[in-house]
Amino acid sequence: ARAGLQLRAGMLAIGDALCSFNPAYGQGMSVAAFETRALGACLRKGLERLPERYGRMAARVVDQAWALSAGEDLRHPEVKGRRPLGSALINAYIERLHRARLAGGSAATLASGLLADCANVLYTTLWASA
Image (cartoon, rainbow, N blue to C red; front, top):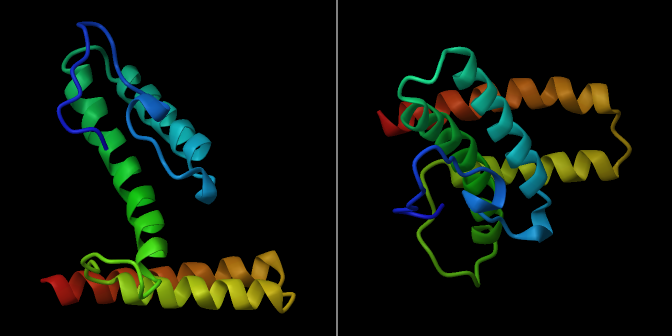
């Protein structure tokens, strides 16, 4: 994300103006769509403190996508950088997901496994950081 992005009054950043992703991961349009949903939710609550409220929601969207793409980069041992807490679990899961899909797993089977595995990873990561 772009730290210290300065905008004129009445303007908000969205999509690549807020944060640009590596196109190899295909996240840019999805993140922009989620930022748009976040903006819509903020607008439904009115204009008071809109930039701050939208900024917090958009940051959560960007941070999650950024962590996923950075985690994929950091999965490779030749890439230098600190591995965030929980990244090994997430990378192991994504590797498992890729293998299951290549083996012909159905979308429903993968989705049900995804929910259970995500809950386990989240639980483990939160407790490990507590």
